[in-house]
Amino acid sequence: MPYATTSDGVKLSYQVRGGGPPLVLLQGQANDHRWWDSVRADFDGTYQSITLDYRGTGDSDKPDEPYTTRGFATDVLTVLDEVGVERAHVYGTSMGGRVAQWLAAGHPARVGRLVLGCSSPGGAHGIERSNEVRRSLAQPDRAAAERALLELMYTPAWLATHPGPHHTTGDPRMPAHARRRHLAASAGHDAWDALPAITAPTLVVHGTDDVFNPAANAPLLAGRIPGAELRMVEGARHAYFEEFRQVASPMVLEFLSRLA
Image 1: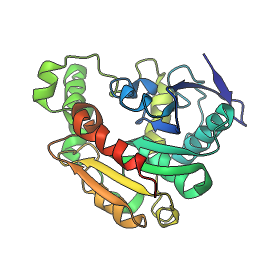
Image 2 (image 1 turned 90 degrees about the vertical axis):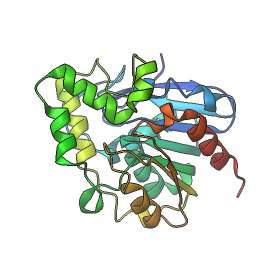
Image 3 (image 1 turned 180 degrees about the vertical axis):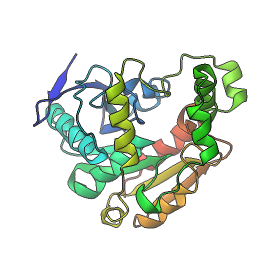
Image 4 (image 1 turned 180 degrees about the horizontal axis):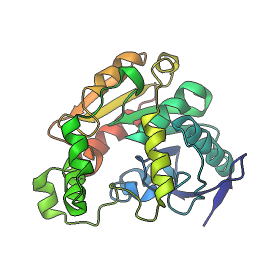
């Protein structure tokens, strides 16, 4: 299994599949690269897809020290350097979209086209989930809390025919300290002031029924990034890219394929 080593000595596991122009796929908070397992084949036929396990997840090192979304973006660059990729399209979902914002804003020469899925600008301008949603995730009955998370990701109708396992609800191998560090990284994200600096052609995608990361964040991002396009996936919750794969993947592929 290949690894890239960061400037502070952290070993990052990464995965490369397919052939063609490089496409970085960035997953959500406290998840490893398996987040993309159900849809990755949609991109591998056209692109060289590149994923990594964030520090704290998967087969990467899990240091007990502060993590940030900007730091995760630097880790992505370390992987790209290791693979020998100077410029790549970037598709980030959930916290991965937050990481992608820093990549595009801080390193414009490294990013071709940018897709931000079910993401948020964070900070004072971001729309936070409701207290009701927070309570559903914090309830003491662990099974009930896990079910609540699943229903924030997917519709009940889809869950009825897709019993899992689900790779979007957290990496079960993560130690407790890494989960806390990931939560803090995502909660501390604030790229509002940096977003106007993004020059990459950008597509913002969000499910209309997403209350885990409220759908109202999508127009905020699209309005803040020059020339960004906004597409809402009707009826979708947070994991729109998986449940509504037949809509979302062609939409993203069409956007990435444009020449101008």
